[in-house]
Image (cartoon, rainbow, N blue to C red):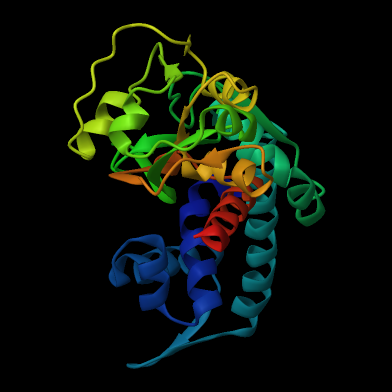
Amino acid sequence: MKDGLSHSLPHLLAFEAAARHGSFTRAAEELGVSQPAISQSVRKLEDRIGVALFTRNRKSIALTEAGRILGEDAERAFGRLGNTLRQLRQMGRPDHVTLSVSSAFAHYWMVPRLQSFHAAHPGIDLRMQQTDKDIDPGQEGVSLAVWRGQGDWKGCRSHLIAAEQVWPVASPAWVARNGHPDSIADLAGSALITLEEPFRYRPGWADYFAAFGVSYADRGGGLRLNDYALVLQAAMAGEGVAFGWGHVTQTLVDKGMLVRLGDWCWTSGAGFYLVWSEVADMPPEVAQVRDWIISVAEERA
């Protein structure tokens, strides 16, 4: 590099930080080195160019006129380099935010709120990846995900979207034909729609009835579906009673499309969490989507 600049770059970096802070100590804290290392780098730079950049006394430093001129140019130059590096990092990222969720969460939690999201963030291209697997954020292009569990996944950060609460739900037409069960034991004998997740664990009717001390044996009959969005569609069509996760079914109950049967709410102790990588850098648009989902969830809490 011309004029031996390559040998001076580390010293220029130390000088720029010291000039900006007006302190060798604060420059050392910013760069993660010792205060004597900063002082030595600045001294080597002064020796190389043959001009004093600071006046020094026992308790403080002050820029000389030469130091002021070099400091202004160095701050501008490093600032431009920083901006260029940020732009290059952004070029290597997708131009959209991908949210990995179940089909039911996409259809019944996200879609009704998309108009509100786009009004708040018109410049963000939000894409929902519907999946029956829990894909790690940061992999396969996934920015954020919604998982069920305790919120303590290795390599991830998380925020509770909704505690897991379950009610039995059915359509108004089904209730008109069959009435409300008199007891939870009567419910166990109703036409129950069963969710059979192929890849990830989800509690089911056996867990629900066990929480209330009711004996229940799944004899393999009735309608069995492997997608929760289909379970809710079947329930709304009057095919039977669905396992009603509250955070997904509340809107359908509010609209009169489903009815809760009894007051038998099961709170499992688990929850549904918004999850993102603990390691990967979070682009600003991903942070905005994350914060928007969290704010909506907290409004509903």
